[in-house]
Length: 404
Image (tube, rainbow, N blue to C red):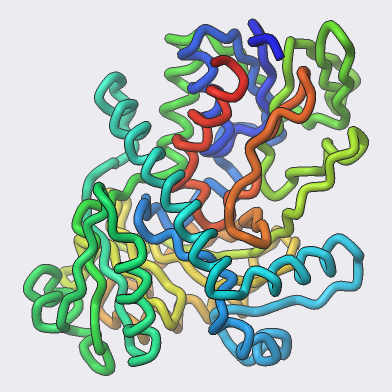
């Protein structure tokens, strides 16, 4: 397949703007189309903000099988499974359960790790060559374990990931507090801490806005915001997208980076991707004296704390199969309660604001789908909870697939 001179990228979340950048810097003339009024206003807008390059553990794992009945009944506050009867969802669940084996967990985790490491390199190259401001810093990351079984399993997974470029250390609580004093307030029940000192943070919405500015002002990208793509037409000589107002845009190739919407436009062309939404929540609260500087993930509670310029971003919960984009007040209250219990003095929780929810595009094996199934069509979809982490690396893979 020949390399295109022009491309239309659908979606301006972190994956979309990264994909547009990877193509534009290779000389492709890019048009970016986004249904919202600006970049990163949906799932990318206010996620956990952690660039977790080493924490690529696949969601499907043997330990999760025993929890499935509780998840389905809503008995695990942090993680809920919504039952649906449509065939695509049932096929997805079947694929997910099939991935809950030791061998597939290992394969999927290491596959995601390789992409994440590529993403780290791509992000470092971007920040070295361009002045994009999004609060990027190497904060380090700590995973806190309160279960002996989970702590033992985490150390085994860390050993499995051991390779050049992967720095993770198992710490006692005392050692962890010496690095991040904020953990002292949450000392009750902590059995061990996995420390990844080279992990980074950055605000994804600021990133997408900075990238959009870079794309339009320096790389010649044209952007259409507030425009919904309703259809894709593929011809021998060009591809075309149809917008909701009837306008049509054409290019050599169209690339779908529409996140949880992924697959909607591809189905009429014979591509049914195994992607379903997993709803998550976040809020941002002012920092206080007890707020952590190191990123913290309470593994059992499924809640993360990230220090940003705007305060402390707290994100968590997982509602698998929930496609409702509205904020559920009860679930947000659960996240606030969970955060207080996990790190009582981690932020000014009474002043929390910026309440948000987003739909993570999940695949059964927790690895994204990056392909060019037709000379005029490609996609970069299904990044799950690691869209922010994998955005730059998956964009580079996409660009190499299309241009090189």
